[in-house]
Length: 544
Image (tube, rainbow, N blue to C red; front, side):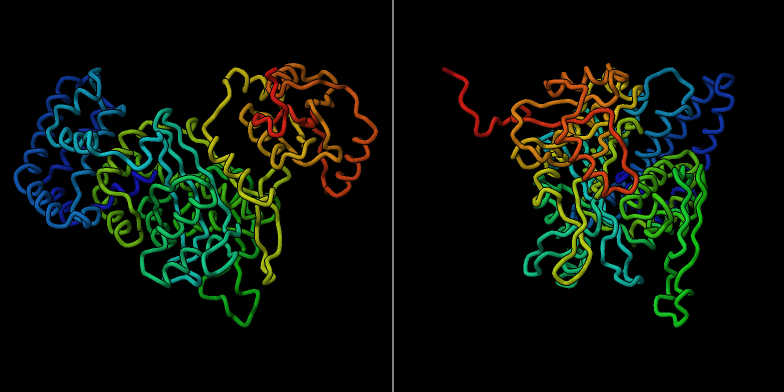
């Protein structure tokens, strides 16, 4: 998604030159052959080869040489310069790996015969160039969304998403960080994380991305290799240039208090807001509606929270990515020309061009099943809690008192369970409540995170009133109805199983559930003992 968006940061003038030469019009017309691919199998290959030769001859004669000179003169300006060559790489790869190709020949063999493509591929895969994070086989990229200069509080980053790319498995993990999360900011005490970008921009222009990256790295305990920051105006314009995006709305979104831009101080208080309504199901959204869908915070029901908003933002990102790489977009010169300008004016990043190419080459085939979606939230099994700052502001803080639980989740986000095991648990729909029966801080949360990887639905996490358990115990409240899930749970935790609750635990449950509006009884209640601590902290040496 990141590479897809930035790949359009090319010079529109160069693009127009190529378009006017007719190269694109001829090249695009070849795509129409896909409807008749069997009849024109051989002719299509010959035609494609001739058009590629025209394109590469044109690139190699003048503009490529000029580009090389420009790169040598201004290497730091490479990303914002005339890099239209990489768009051809993007388009060529798409064509050769999609159903447009009528040949049975492998796409890699076709691409290797294109001089400019081979040159760029060598650039990306050169042995003396490594991505940041490549040695640890994981690249972390911070995605930031802000209002921009024309918005009130325009430098507050209300969208913060950590995108981690596993170079070995080719999986992608996206974790949304809520804007109200409080962290320590140097010389400013504890502040909401969304304010860091604004503080940095006041001190030095275009320093916000770096500042937020450093702050997030500090609290999560991982390096942030790259950042990408987009403002709302650019986002709206990009979606409109794409002729809108198609998203699946999981729950009807109805917000009676969505703020109207420019009406923040209107005397008529009600006129400050509009009624936003987006029905459940597949919807086609224009730029303005897509932004509202991603930003709404006061919707009715389950969508009325920052955490629901974070999930919607991930849906929007995926939809934009899908539209950017669609056939309709890639073979529309006018549309790409419009996208170029938006990327130049509204995107800030520390990614270099060769890094974009290398990332694209590594993650071009990632599909939805390889993407892990997480949201830091204050749900019953979440890692955050609501609290009030000294100045009276609402903030979110780590439930454990520090970021150790969150760091554990981030560091283990790619570890997974066998598919067969997950399918068994999913089929039975097993729910679990996890309670800590030890003095080991964060043990219940870490165990809950591990169980979720096996597709257990952890509905509640907390502490046991008795914290002297040596061995973990599973209380089976399904009374044998979900025996396969019980067997898996027992194997994972190496725990004892009981089919009845002790009196003290019944009293604890009644007290705890009285404070919940809609309490849900789990299938299994787990109380963790000392043996669940893999570090064996404080235990005697078992060696005689």
